[in-house]
Image (cartoon, rainbow, N blue to C red; front, side):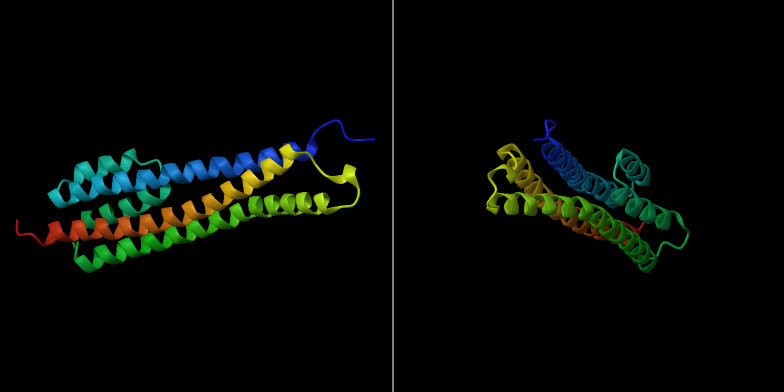
Length: 182
C-alpha cells in the first residue's frame, strides 16, 4: 500500500529550503561586507573614528563586525603602530576563517542529506520496479537543493575571502591615516 503522505517530497523541500535560506543569508552578508567595509575605510582615511564605530554598529554580520572592532580597539590603544594594527587585523581574520570553516562543516550535513536524496532518486529511477521511483516533484526539489547548496558553498568562500580583503583594506586605511602628520 503506497504512502499517502509525500514524505520524500517534504524532506527534499525542507533540505532545499535550508540550503536556500543559507544561500540568501550569505548573499546578503557578502553585500554587507562590501558596503560597510568601503564606508568604514572612507571614515578611517578621514580620521573619523566615531563614523567608523557607527558603521560597525550597522553591521548585522559577526564576521565583519569582529574584524572592524578589533581594528578600532587597536586604534584606540595608545600604541597604535602599524604592526599592532596589522597583527590585530590578522588575528581577527583568522577567527573569521575558523568561523567560515565551521559554517562549511554544518552545511555539510545538509549537503550529505541532499546527496543522499539525489542518490536515492537516481537509484530508484534505475530500479526495475516501476513503483519504486519517487515523483518528479521530488526529483526537481532535490536537484534544486543540490544546486542551491553548491551556490551556498561558493558564497561562503566569497564572504570569507571578501572579509579578509576588507580587513586588509581597513588596516591599510587606518595605517595611512596614522602615518599622516597631524
